[in-house]
Length: 442
Image (tube, rainbow, N blue to C red; front, side, top):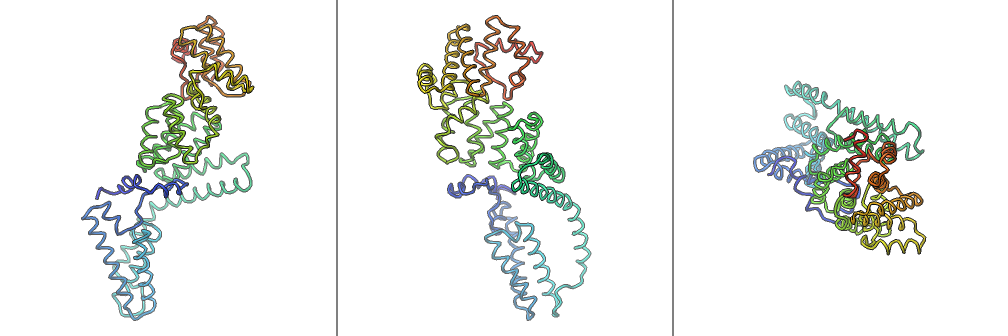
């Protein structure tokens, strides 16, 4: 009796872990699939009594129709009995709109048959006018749902054609238009908002209008959370969006809340792992990474690929080394390994670590040399290392080449507009501030 909708809020933590893992599509648990129990769980004793009385009336209609000496009425009574049985296992009498309508028709027909002695199942009554009025009243808001269904059907057709025939030039525009139509028709549709968020994040990934797409993803996630505040998938997606915005505290709150409800929520685990490596505790990030590997969502052999991903998101070299399983306090060992195996990435990462050691000691000139070497090695391996590029410019600014550093910084929009904002070594923060001030950004 905690209130309407509270089953969805209270039950997920009690799901069977095996069942949760088998629900690979992220199935939400929003209904107990038992009408007889739901009304007591969500509406308390008063609501439970009223709803159970309604169900009891349906039982009476059912057996009354079965006792009639008329074949059609017996058939309707049998159908109503089947619906009642299913109401205890599949929620088809009250909790499902389509089958609920069938149950309402069957109940009405049995009720009409109960009042007459003839075989006619439809009789005129004063309720006909009321039925017409109610039907019209229902049809008005139902129009928006019809528009929603049409837009989602068009989206499904486009997705199917793309899967079977490949993506053509206008595919993304048509998909966006279908999703926009669905959202306009029914702004609180969880499915429409989920599709809007997924596609907006996909556009961010491929670099298509990243700012506008990320903002659209945030709006979609917010609307989805309004409708499903305890949905682990919605919470995880919001955490992912906030991570991309660089709002780490909010991202951590939503990600951890999602894991409280579903400890195996893959998006939340992945987002929290990235968050910790980029701007938190790398050891804690490793814990999330191990959990993903234990669930089979990532491979232990995939550590290097993950390290490259967080490096591209601005993770410091210490965190990247931890992600690879290397010791960040022993860059010489990593450097020697890279030279011995001719692995240029190991050499680049070691040089980046050397640079941070020099900065810790206050030796900017030595750090500048190491950063230049790291930058060259990163480029040779085609590794995206924005933090190393920015720190190199900051070190050059500190070392006296302020004009050159400012010119390069101004021409590097991916550095000064990076999202989330890159976090340079503390010794370089004042130099970064001066570079940004030269753009008028701060």
